Length: 471
Ligand code: ZN
Image 1 (cartoon, rainbow, N blue to C red):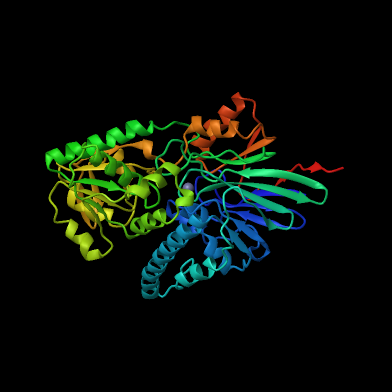
Image 2 (image 1 turned 120 degrees about the vertical axis):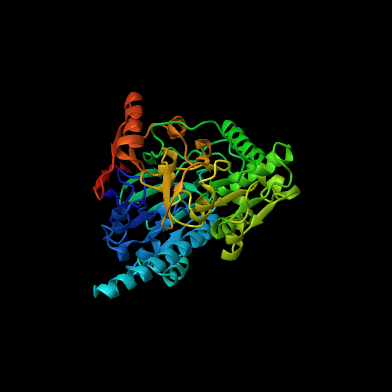
């Protein structure tokens, strides 16, 4: 018996967590956090749908919070197996999980004060920084792309580059159970080809029997990279000429480094002023940028070559501001600066202070370069809100608003289909990691068109995988 079940990212985008079970082994593929509204946040504290202590190993595809965010909770609930990941994924996961634990400790402290005043039971954080430290001890020796590793009895994993963020992988599991054997390719999140910092997504080393695949943008394509670069440079340039500031709400992993790279080259090509002041106002993005430069094995060969000549993320006018006081000093700059800060969807972080100081002035610009979930301040601004509530004030939205979607770290529909075509024709494609009524349904329609059998995994639904018999 070889069984697959999903315990997150089932008919939704976040919380990736899939389980492969045989008579001899239980392997988890990712253990991510649910992100979004309050109900989703509460889902993180629920039971996993399996016993944490029964899991032999975790195969981690990449370091985004929605793929690794529940690992410390898994350990807290009894998991003591090994976590397998690439070297870059391990380094980024440490950063991402530390940040997450810090936020949860803060949230719990706040909730603690409220609950104590009302005499209610005191809530616990999901996990604390010490839990993250213990979790990091479970990471096995880093996996290299192409290496075949036995992660549990009868389960061999091969990682290939997924081109999504630094260290990201698709993982082929080759599974034996008695005289049955089968193979399942887990896509992880799939990136885009032709990006300057990362190699293109790679096909699996061998054709899989089954594919479990993400469908985040299963319903649409992005604008080409080059058009998006031109749009970004034009937006920065015109704000500079108006004497305004440019705010770029930034995701710390990948997007921040992509934008720095684009600005660097725009300055080199004299498309932007040489001493353009650029503030990377995010401790997490600063650390992530450092980790980038430490992992040439996970970067595009041409980028590594360029790094040997100069640092293509280090602009002349770049200021990396870790300290709060440095960040607050940025508020006094009346114009001519580019300010990159988190969070990408403006739900928290330093960007909210910068919005308060800049959003009301029509000389300024705000450029959105990433996914904006509904209900978030980023979404409200993009959808044309007249004002935004920030720190108790209603701030008018008068700045020029741009949305540039070509920087997305996810492949669009056309590239997802192209990726799948390189997997041969699997017996079945299991669709996960997408909005049920958008990306996922649209992608299923496409699979229908090419006569590819598919199935949408339900939460916890057990699915028997057919093995080939040796006899
Ligand atoms: Zn991701």
